[in-house]
Amino acid sequence: MRKILAIGILLAVIAAAGIYLLQRPEPIPVIIHSVAEGAVEAIVANTRVGTVKACRRAYVAPAASGQLAKLNVREGDAVKKGAVLLEIWNDDLKARIALRKKEIQVKEAAARQACSIARRTKLLQKHDGIISQEQVDDAVTVAQAKRAACQSAMAAVQVGRAALTAAKADLERTILRAPFDGRVAEINVELGEFVTPSPPGIATLPAIDLLDISCLFISTPIDEVDAPLLRLGMPARITLDAFPKQHFPGTVTRIAPYVQEKEKQARTVEVEVTLNEQQLLKRLLPGYSADIEVILAARRKALRIPTAAILENDRVLLVGKDGLLQERVIQTGLANWDYTEVLSGLAAGDRIVLSTGRDGVEAGAYVSAEQTAQ
Image (cartoon, rainbow, N blue to C red):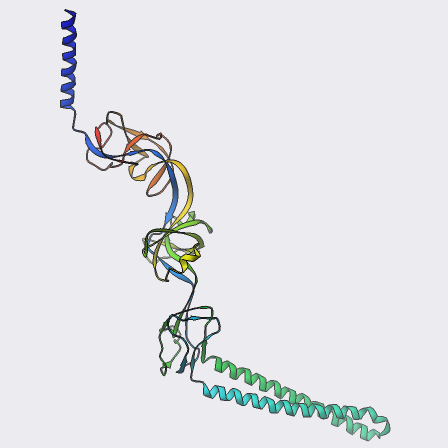
């Protein structure tokens, strides 16, 4: 009798389990992530693509207009500060300088003669004890006149030197020199052309575009909301379209003191990041597009989960042993687009749903692992 009763109970349990399995909904395939430790950073990224820029760039042109007589460089040439890049025709100015120098030589000779006579006349006065008073008065008058002639001759020399300085300044206006060590990026003039400086308020092509590429920086816009979080000296990570899947270290070296209003609905602050790797400078060209991530804070070993797994109000879907989803509220710490630090609510090894946007994925649903992400 007892055997029959036990068999009956067993059959009832099997029947109930079969009915449950038949009525249980089909598990939803989802991507499951196992909670583990890893690095998490709080970052601020640029809102629009940035640009690699040279630390110095000069659009240079001669100060005077005229016909281009000498062009001493080609595009791509490296030049030193003060090197002559080009010259406007200036033979007349050079001749004027030569004339001024000759005039100074003549005036200096006249000054030496006048001053020498003045000195001799002064010596004659020392013997006034052996000559009459009238002769003494005459000698004094002559001495004063000679001294005045000496002073006038010396002043004429100074005027000549000033005229020479002015002539040299006029000549220098026809000569274009490199304002710093750099490399010629572009030349927009040809020998024989008539070169004219840009009129006020009217932009024209510069004669020469000169770059100093001994140092480079990234200039990029940051959203005005994120700008208050930035400080000079913060580390940054740089990515360049020209070097995919590579990251380069940098440092925040400038934060603009104003907000740009180019787009009324997207106001930004210009931020500059200097590259830290000197070897990289040899591989970069000004004008490359670049993106930056300024690192506000970082933890190298934190309990973390993918940010995409977090629902509103810091909730996640925890996968139970039987595949039943449970809602769990967590406390978060540092976060970025990829990972968020978990301060409480989860433990290492817990499994959560990563593909939360699928239909039917909610607390109380059954799921199966379509893929397990780590």
